[in-house]
Length: 329
Ligand SMILES: Nc1ncnc2c1ncn2[C@@H]1O[C@H](COP(=O)(O)OP(=O)(O)O)[C@@H](O)[C@H]1O
Ligand code: SF4
Ligand SMILES: [Mg+2]
Image (cartoon, rainbow, N blue to C red):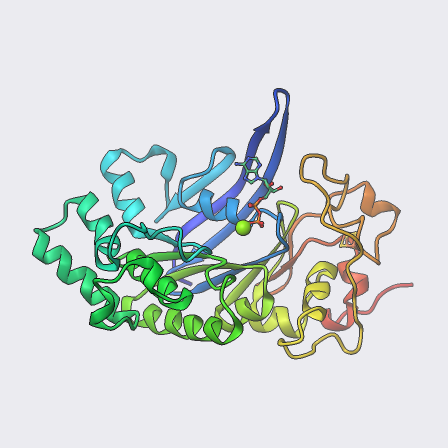
């Protein structure tokens, strides 16, 4: 197995709200991004995905735990290491407008990270930016246009080009196709797949949409209320999920082929506030299999099949068939 490029070890991120209270947006999350893979991160809005993305880029206030880049704790980086790290890990945001300055041409916006870094001369930087724009499929005549002259899909291509100019190792895509219609989503997903090979990228792909994530990801981590509740290869997660929350997400997604064997799980209510999360298993207020113990004990994320981990107290009993176990009654 390859050494992880980027890893989070037991990372918690808290934000102060008001004078005395805080919200734990990410609560003891561990994940490993291995070189060359696409890791999907999925969960409802508010589950902490964007905060994980920011933590992975060294941009979130880490209350506990460690973020490592190539094995080294990023909080110990000197200025030079920090700069190399921020060039190596680039983000593609949800909003296609976000990274494009309305007063600058597309070429200027895409060139900007290189200008900031002061890499090469102006001509070199222009060439690198133009090459990136070509690689994302924007024609030469687009280079001198302004953002308002581009469609949503073209803007998102320009954003991707902007993330590529520093020649990153890792692309963090946070809801990068969420603002696009389904046909454009497929185009951008295919583009990312091509760029991954061409630029030798490792991708952390974040979305609330399992069909989008399962299209690209080799492995998937499922988040709920600041915790990772299931971790598996995409195939294993889709074919034999071992967590009631993931199953609910799967059964709500018509594009993913049905693995629920007719068992349709409907989520009750909204995700609770992470300001005062439920005790025990955080999913217990919405889980149809919740029992008394689920309100008392917080389940650990345990590897129950090779490479497949679940955080559910009742995993052995609920998924005995998938685990090939017999349950004592
Ligand atoms: N800067 C912040 N200040 C206060 N609360 C925040 C901040 N960023 C995120 N949160 C809270 O943390 C939780 C997780 O947010 P986020 O990471 O954006 O989730 P997701 O991306 O899965 O929707 C939410 O309840 C959100 O309101
Ligand atoms: S621990 Fe209990 S509440 Fe949590 S997912 Fe498992 S059965 Fe549901
Ligand atoms: Mg988000």
